[in-house]
Length: 432
Image (tube, rainbow, N blue to C red; front, side):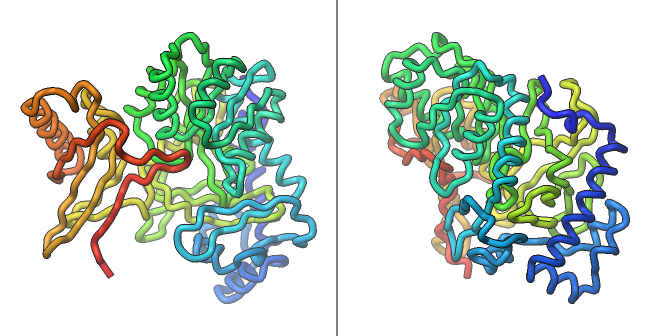
């Protein structure tokens, strides 16, 4: 099932369309956004210099710091009076990024999410239970608009009310569940506690995103809920969820290339990389009115393939996000990502997929502790079995990362749960 004809254009047709849209968007930001006008003028770059798609490489990158400096509305490419909805990124340091939408932008948002949901096999007959937040976070509204676009019924339950989530799923005959991976696993635990057989729910599909995950985590989610789980990708700075999604093949995320122009660059050299080379994802908005962001550095690490998919779509696919350049932690000179640790943990049956990585530097050397929840059976088992499992965990992690972690098994359900993005790493080192 394919939603839009643009998903099946030939590479030549698609690139011709992308060039026309790129030329228009560069001209528009040059004329309407002070930030871009100043930046391009300083570099001696002008809209007429974009004659080929490759010419996009002449343009500078846009970073999250650039968008923060434009807080709240100075990056808009249109009269702010035409902005009818605003969203915002989470505020971790400094000012958040504000994302503004015109009526056309909201229609566009619904369109790209509709494509994603259709890739998952969802149609007008489905009931979508959306646990993403409906506040300034883009997740809830994006899924909502897309589900409405395809004619599905939406349960806008948002985050929280976790036991109520399970009751609603059972009573309303939910066929599609949308959640973050960590929250989904938590809901699965609650369902089992309530004595509910999730296999009887007859879920058709699960849509998940908004945080890092591993194939092992996907497998666990699919086994718990007895339904295929598809990754949805998006960013507040670009539009929200809907930039890309997995199809039935679950072999990479299709990017709506007629709407978003993707590039992969080497984070250090900033040079564009070729197909299937791993690097940082850069995205340019080709259609959006309110925020026509050009060459945004997502900090997400992935690769791209232009090979047509078995589903019939010809749009480029990015591989599963390996991590973020700002999530990577360096310990004893070794770069590690939480996803590597999660992959190791999910090979061990006697523990739960809830963990925290704590990095300390008590003296001159880094120390890494990982707290992992034991299963109920293991926690009340003999000490020697817990010692054995700790060694197994340590060995698996060392095999994945090259580092030896101090493993601490903690009581089931003792680590904090998150209804949004799980906080996996606590770095207690004073590095500055």
